[in-house]
Image (cartoon, rainbow, N blue to C red; front, top):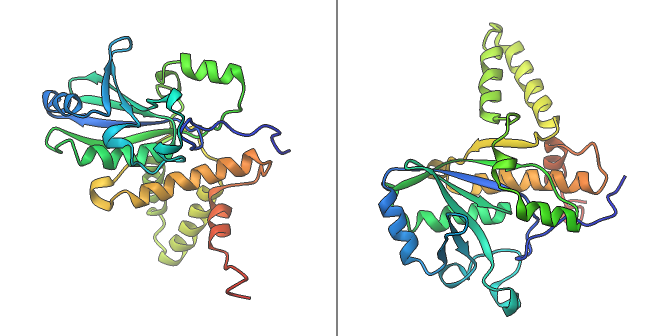
Length: 248
């Protein structure tokens, strides 16, 4: 059944989806020095966090709406918030996958990798209905409520466990057949509510992560529209289907 209400979007026009990026910090003083120099980052003493604003150095980011289309009365818009969990770990909380991938690139250009490096992220695979209750709850609740949970699924660990199991089969032909069946089974499984994944940003760049997060977003949208059978496999198949205008 199709959801009669539209999903929640951010002030800057992206689909609202919670993402937390994790950083390993090697020199906190250097990171704080960068924050203090950036005009788009300000300290919020009420919550002991550094907020990232859609202003100044960040105003040219490619979000759902350009900076120029945002009413002056709602500026500055907070698009992310940094907190230090310890001297060696920093968290960046965001409300869209677009903000997450652009944040990784934006701060990598400004924070020396010897001072801090992004390691992994967690994503909440859930869309939210536009209601006053939801909006109030999302504003009041700490991001920890969504991310510090026991049911986090780590696809990389699932993959390694699957590989170890497949390697027990000595027959190469059977192993290949079982591997394909296992991959298809994983792709057809519904998304876990909270996933943790490596960014692999320094090895592969940002594009593979952008694609991975976008596929999750598309599956959630299909399910929101009422397609309860939507999964990663049929989303990919749909995207790869030839356009009949060019391949009749």
